[in-house]
Length: 152
DNA sequence: GCCAACGTTGGC
DNA sequence: GCCAACGTTGGC
Image (cartoon, rainbow, N blue to C red):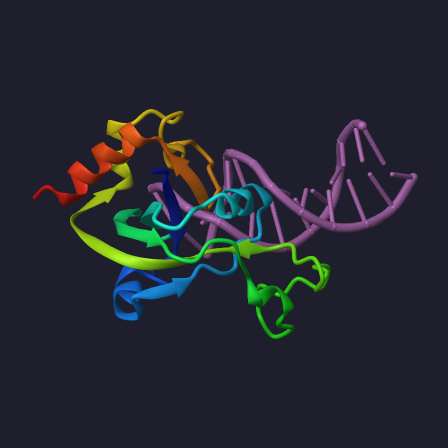
């Protein structure tokens, strides 16, 4: 079962928001590589919730893919900041998934720890200048992350 | 708030 | 198809 890592700015949408909502549509991804990863997600896949643009950035918890391959409705909403006028309605550009809340880790894993623990090729979020917001996580790395997050 | 990294756009 | 300009991301 594949593992993923998805970034969100907690000021915009945090794991506490997902805990409250139970399920969310992961909208607004406008990068083709990230979209391709979203497209390849299957129901039941697990995804780490990464808090970006906060102090400190890091992994806050875990979620699970519910509905795969959902058309991102915001691409057709002119009032949305994610509006994409070039996306053909009969062949939408942007697909995503819905995700359900699984857990908030008792131990937040700050970026600093991620850097000390994992190599950039194993966990892309520690690559310098990395801006990709959706990325795969190798299973062996995911297992270590679960240990770190669930430990106290 | 700054700015390096980097993806995208558009002129040629 | 190249690449400069531009806009955005995200750590600090």
